[in-house]
Length: 355
Image (cartoon, rainbow, N blue to C red; front, side, top):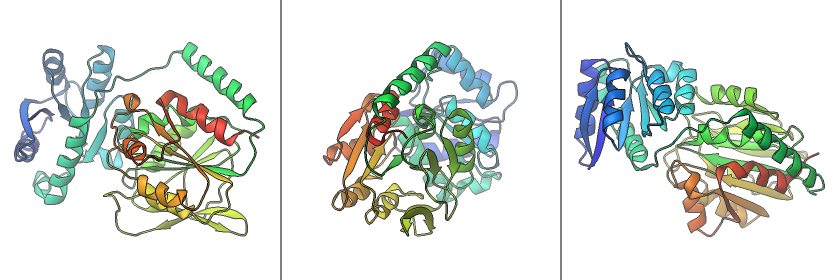
């Protein structure tokens, strides 16, 4: 039975969350805390399989707690549960950047938390977080960033003669927003291919994720809009809550969204993105599958491989927060390369080249 710590300043909300968690035989609420200070004291003395953490609390809020855990090198597997997570997409991304693995939007009214929809979602995410590896937040020093930049420049020089018209299609889920920060900012401005990304996130969060990555990167990063024409050196992140497809017309490729039901339990689903590339005229499609629960991407890549020349890069288990999606690719025998997170960018560059 997994031991859970619940941190929330509302007595009613604490009771509702604890009732939901304890109703599942896989979990048991071991302790409760009313703010970040209490939680910090508990986490410095005891270990838990997962922490359900509110954002807005007196004395020490959720983000301050995550910073403190990082500073003291205390590893904890955290999921955010806050009313802030919908309108406060920035807060959520801050939390994910500081080491939280996933989040659930908590209704404003405690009674709405008793619905099956909320209950199922909370328990599903909690199960993934509890089974994941503790994540230590990696903060790059200036020297490491310089070394990383030099590596990209070196790889780019060798990749200047890579032939062909290519596209990169990347899929990620739990742990993905943070993992993307180790990949996208390392791609050079003159990358010779567009990059389409399906990151499992609800509507309202992907625009903030794209904006944040754009400020950190040489390549242009945007939330993909309906009808966007794919251009080399640009990263297109699928809008949360819709399925992204790549359409071809008159030798150009553009973004088209569909509103089909969830597939693999997610929307957007990477399988649709991969399958939409089956009839494209690209010389090669570089498929990248990173951290995340489930098997999204496997079926789509299988169908794509039957029709197109592809090169598949899977994230290595030890660097995944959740080794689900890449494991499924490897188990299916579809991976051409299995590489650690910090080497994915250079492998993308080597495969698609620079202009």
